[in-house]
Image (tube, rainbow, N blue to C red; front, side, top):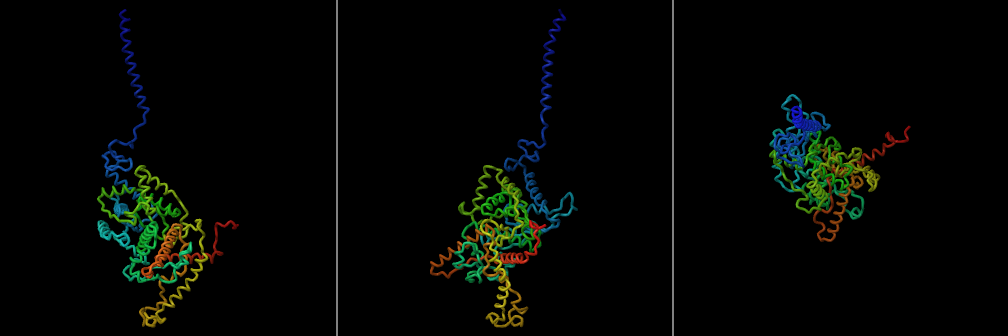
Amino acid sequence: MVCDRDSDDDEPVATATTTASTAETATAATAARRKPTSGRALKQGLCNKCKAVKPSVMIKSAEFCRSCFLDSVAHRFRANLSKSPLPEGSRLMLGLTGGASSRVMLNALADFVKPLPANVRKPVRFPYYRVCYVDQSAVLGNPDSLSQIRAMVDAYPGIELTVVPIESILDADSDTTTAFDPRESLIALDGSADAIAAKASLRVAGGPPADLAALADRKTALLHMLESLGKMNSKEDVLSQWTLRLLLRESRRFNCNALLIGDNATRVAIRVIANTSKGRGLSLPADIGDTPWHDGVYLLRPMRDVLAKELGIYAHLMHLNTVVHPTLTTKLPLKTSINHISEDFIMGLEKTFSATVSTVARTAFKINTDYMDKKTCPLCEGPVDEFDGFGALKLSDGIAAASSLTEASSSTTSSNCCGSGSEDAGGACCQTGQGPNTAGCCSSTPSRSAAIPAGIDLFPLLCYACRNVARDIKAEQQRQAATASNESSAGQGLRSAILPAYVGRAAAQRMSRDKMREQISDFLLDGESDDEP
């Protein structure tokens, strides 16, 4: 009986021990089934990257400390610049505007060219670079910006700064100290009633711009060209094209292999919407990414993966001073231009959907067109799609105009020879040493304007977007002509539309090439011909 009681007393103890052992086994099995914790897991209240410091910057839904954020922006700049196909030792030109994007790019490039502390003997890939600033104060005002730009560049010893006024677009080089000659720097468009009534023509007039007295200097001529454009879209496009052309020209002048401009991801997204709306879809890859399109200069956009908000925060944390420039649409209504509408559209979506800019930009970077095989537009210097549905190129008229190039040049120089009895030369020829040019006769040094044949039609040579600009010029000509006919003082002011002379020279050169190709077409080998054996 005693044994039986002792056995009965031990049963509850054994049952409790078995239950505890089963629970521990279940807990261990559950823990074994769990995945190991990843080292990349976010920690609440700490930086998402280093996970050791409290965050101070929030971008989208990510939080970073100051050091990690600055390293992230600099890393994206270095990665984009390192991926460029430029060889080692290439010379760089940095286009500076003073805004947050170009200011951060200048600071990042200054750090990029420094030797690595861990490996001082390793050569720097791009040891030489200089800065170019296009002064647009003649159009936009803000004349104090130049002194701020100089102080900004002086903070980096050894960096050379080149300042180019926007009005120098009228010259073939950067020398603006010489006297302004409208006959050399401008071409006049035909402002006759027949030309205005034509629907698809933009012909160069036979003579110099009318009322040359109204074009006292380069600034006056530049402002008149912008005023001849009635729509704000055309003014913004032309001003942007002139700025880029000047930067490229300075890059070639200093033998730089690449031009760096500060287009950020936000600006790229806005440009994608705006340029597509304007009909510049063919040149979209060249307008938003790195491109070798421009002859002799590789165009790079190393800040294309950085948001405008990130650049503003970077400049604030690094205490980088920036320059705020007014634009053509400053304090104007929203619907003033397509660029203004596109900017409001993208920024409005970005406030609600934080991935809007990155989605649009990364999608646009995947777009690929055959723009490298196209001809060049003489106005914007972008690719031209000859089969755009708005009429084929009228090369017959253009070739006929180009064929008169030699005759026009010879007739111009012979009629303008100082020995032709003109009053300026006093009837003496330069070759005799009695005229104003003792080095030789003026007929041996024809002017640049003589290379532009009169009557050349620019319209069929333009891209689709620039044709809209040409229509805007013609509409403004017609309006001014109607106004002049109703006013008693119709002779006051400059009535004819004008353009920089480089537009006419580029058109004449392209037509000459088309004519030469037509003449030797029977001797060219066509690898895509189906008739070949």
